[in-house]
Length: 131
Image (tube, rainbow, N blue to C red; front, side):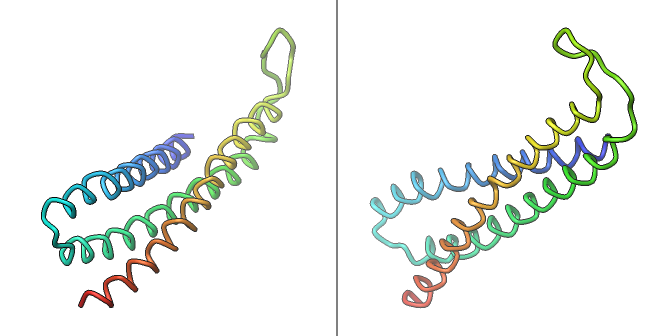
């Protein structure tokens, strides 16, 4: 179970990093471009940043999906009964709900991967035009 927590914390950390990079790219870099009126260094940073963030998001989605599927299979037959919401529910049913939520959150990273991969392609074309 400890590895599961590490997997989900990695997924959460990379998600927060991706949001931070997106905010940095949209707010700070646009202000820098307006003030300095020189975006050659900015284009190079966006090129490498988009590549790194898209690969990190891909690994986070893979870790989240893999951990959810593996631990859901592991826990399903391991525990017999648990008390939840004033009734007895099998722990397998509880774990299935928990790990399905993990699958949904990891699956939402797939949309982020598609978006950052398309930004990565666009930054490749922009860098080619600048250099």
